[in-house]
Image 1 (cartoon, rainbow, N blue to C red):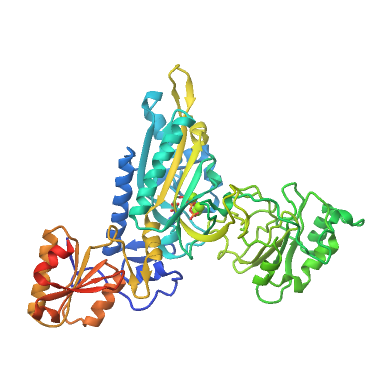
Image 2: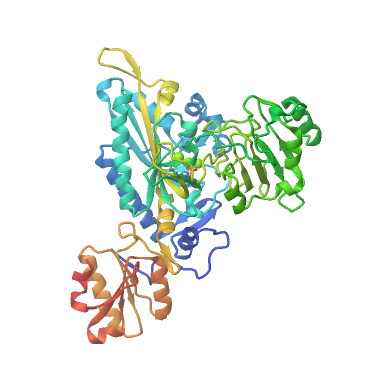
Length: 581
Ligand code: ATP
Ligand code: MG
Ligand code: MG
Ligand code: MG
């Protein structure tokens, strides 16, 4: 294959797109891989589409290698199956819902558990049919609260999703481990620097759950790891209760010690009086425990919008008031974190008062969170403090509540040393669905004894389009993208420089010879474009090997440059094909 830049549908840009925050977004747009069509929705240009298909090919090969079979579902789906599993509601605003001309309800699939379950139910009825693994590479739709970072978090994106069907939990484990091994191969081949972390399965249910996170500063996931190899998404970790926060000079003084402590009812009344909320009055609930929330404007007025101390125990109102003094609302500093072991960082998302998050930690959350609002939360026990967060920026984009329950230095739950925190991009997620979907949709088979059993399922996703961006996050420099060879849009980028016809002819025959040898070539055959522009473009585009055909030709040599290391080498024209194949 030879892509000729003189005719290639490509315009590289010198300027970063204005809406781009992270390197992959900037570079993929500037280098002409993708173009924005609408927020979180992108068109793939020839180079980008080539890379996307290369990623797909790797995923497809590794799925086929474990015996998973490829199918393809529609993206436009009927409401009923999602109604049966409650996800029509549960998905909330993230679901794209639409109506057909007769008024029937449809959705654009955010993930396809229901459809796979029903298809297998349609066709299979015996334990002899199992195990079964099916997958598809499909466009998914999620109306993400804040599509950010280009194709890293799209509202339309490409996912490989697979589903396994087994007759028992033991059999399921084999399917799970086969997928896990396949994922390791996939992410190795994609050239990603990644970690495998324990994860919660969130809304999906089930117990075994692991995420493959590409390590990246810009990642939206926070995970913890220990020197001994423990690694978990912060959502999945529970830690020992830290000591009470020394709010005042007598850290040991607790509310219970104070004779005139108001009850939670007094506090709720206080909140409703001082911070009335017509839409959702403050109320006490047994899911509100030991968490203080102070919400205030980011504009410097520091006027609290809302203050709450939930709890099933009594609270010292004086202490509460001390907390809302303006001075107390200063964001914690690094020194605070160092001085107070109970201070931890984390997230709190827009949610509902008294909502319980996936990991069982309870928060008092104002449902009216708006972009730009800062939250300060504090707690005596179990020591949750979340500060200086901006809705939309820090909250998970799909609006779920996450909390950092651990802090650097905590011991790993398995005793493998102190934890440190780091950021990552979720590239893949494998988990046990158990019988949640098979039960809801009635997927049963007859076992050896002729008894009906409900099928055990697993669900496994890879962010195919996200991988394109994550690879760039992992692998770029100031000049541009540095593709690992297997996903690169070409193996070799030939740059012909100058005006000399002989140079262009020599470059062109080198391109032909490489092509004949099975090497994928991007050939900069543009006339009247300066060498400087061509070199810049070659670095921006990021093909792993750059071959400059120019002045050296008079001496019978071309220059071979390694995009990643910058190493250059002169190679005799006649030896070039052998050197590059
Ligand atoms: P995230 O935590 O990033 O929102 P998720 O946990 O909601 O992802 P899953 O439902 O586990 O995602 O989907 C499987 C995979 O699909 C993810 O591991 C990720 O790689 C990819 N993915 C999910 N949402 C998006 C998106 N909005 N844009 C691109 N890829 C996505
Ligand atoms: Mg999500
Ligand atoms: Mg996730
Ligand atoms: Mg996930």
